[in-house]
Length: 317
Image (tube, rainbow, N blue to C red; front, side, top):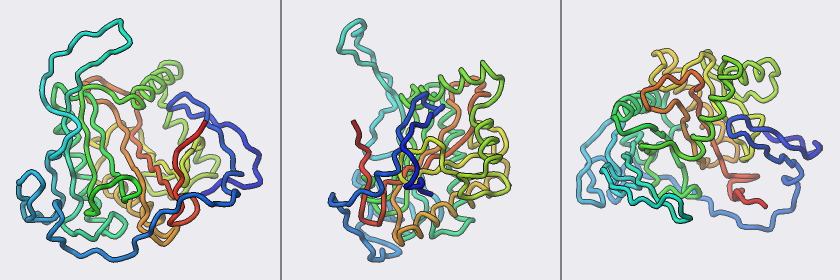
């Protein structure tokens, strides 16, 4: 979905981050003389002997992958976080403050096939990915020092993905990331004021308006958020109130896999290319507290603006 190019520029409010974003549809009418990304339409092999994620291959740290035939999860060989207790050097009250951050980084290989992305898999395979995410969220979230589990996928070289083998990542850490912490505060404030879930109320209004839906399934809806900033930005929301991926029953798990796959197919078909994106699941913190203010949801942030080769860099003033 795109904004009407005849629409007047205006601001829209994002209640999750408590911020206003400028929406100017006239940007899409500008002549483009900027950077164009190369497109790669060549097919990949089913198995690449040089790929460190393919079954049976040796990774950069010398470990050998098993001959896996479904999803395969391992601790990242080059983690941004370390699962070690670190003594903090107190720098309170200064302009140069540091704090230790403990966590675990994992890689989730979606398939043994080197050449299959989510839109090219069948629903059974995608449901297996969702079940793997559920297992990882439960396992990592039960660790006493882990308070947030972020499940995400950066697809495509344009998004900085270092390996074309279909995979995602999980970052589990002791503190809430900055954007999640802002969302937490706003969801909590809305719940305390209204006694209801913000995103549940939001979805109810969206379904009443019927303006921004992309896909609607029995249990989930994919829509363009009212406050969308990225080109073709989409959010997937459940119709039932629940706050984490582990709260889904079997029917919801299959339905989530189905709408996730269908949304990825729509992206691929938009510009007839393997569509790059950053996608992330947002759900309740794993601090052991009840979080009725949270509603499980997934964001798609795709960078392509008007063709397979024109990327929209997120810059501003």
